[in-house]
Length: 582
Image (cartoon, rainbow, N blue to C red; front, side):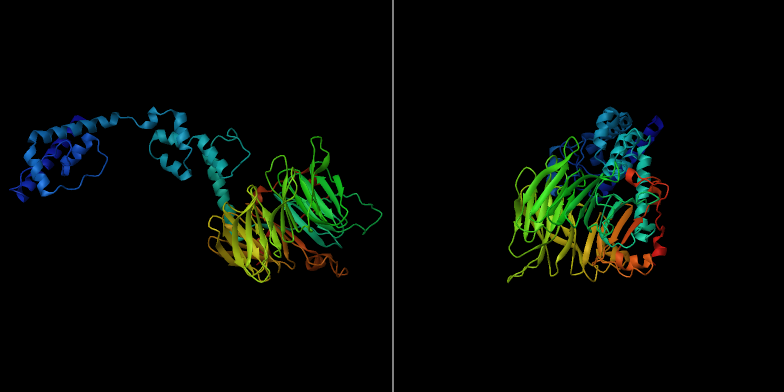
């Protein structure tokens, strides 16, 4: 502050003090003046000056009583010069305030970055408005790169790939908003994957946009829906070509990022490596029909259940497939899942009637759950938990429930729901943390809160029961036995749109920008072969749909060698969803 400003400030300050003192004297002429001591709290401007001089950051003390004021006045009386000293001291402190530096100037830059890394994007924006120094710290590339990684944007990129990570973060947020808008408004492209003439769809599975399907003709096809041209090669088997129509039906198909697996009705199992070619790298044979098939989504581990045996297969260090573990169970297996992220020794969970087994490769089969006469109706697993629906029977009816077990402690953590219908599907692996979604034959889709063991939301979804369901942080996609696929915004409890086909929905899987649905018929018999192939296919042979809500993410060539386009490529049917399904 310059000298003129200080003089003006001092003059106005002294005038206000004089007016305040005169006003107090007129109101209380007989009451003695009270001056604030060092440990006492004054009023008005003297209180402000005294507090600033002493560095007080607390609110003023409660007003003293009349007896306390008289006692303080009798002990000490401050002369008028004391007030002028306080004002001069306050002015000197205000004049020196510009010389006191902010903490970020004295703080090392690396330490300031470590403090700012605990802030989110909104807090960083507010800090950037404090000062120029804070703006430099809040816009550091390390902070915005970490924000991109935390929210899942460009997870495989390094910090040196881009020069301005704040701009990249804003672009990713804008694309995410556009995707959400496209999902809500049903705007995108839909493709009906090409069918096989004179064959009925048996099973469908997908992983990250790559779809595998098995048919009654014994054929297995793979589509890479992440490209513009859906090239769908046939994965070859080792059956004799001179026996057309004699190949057994395909019972189950599974796929991950590198492997494709198909189980046949005669007990054979074929494993293909999508990176090498169309011919199987391993073939395994069971003595009886394969009742359940599971494939790990992270590594090359396959589990099969046939009769009363469960077998785990995986390649050794030299690449040769071998049996890692073999288990014997008491009943026929209904559901089989491989636990993700188990390391060197694979772990699986199998259900057989009213028994639930925990299968560890280095141990024998252990019973995880067993209640006589209460069969398991669905199963899903995560890295450390298993969830399965239990049907209540007997004299004491407790209602159908979903049990959540800890795989480490091998004990029940939660008993969820109390429904009249059977739970037909449950999704624990793909649900947000502390949430789980399930479908029931009573037509309802339920969101369960694992922290409170209560139902967070219940939606009346499908007339004939729910057959498949999946959720993320804001939406639910459900499929029903009547062939209806519905998309919900569960935060608003509102249905966004729906698509109907003839057959039940047996598979659905989605990510941020795509959706795969499969309608698989009950009967595996070809009908009306004299009609047009397309009409027959829609009525009796099943359908596979691929929805894409971000067309700019489609590649011109597949990353999988087996799905790369050749001279004659098969094209899908691309058109706007709103036009296709009014």
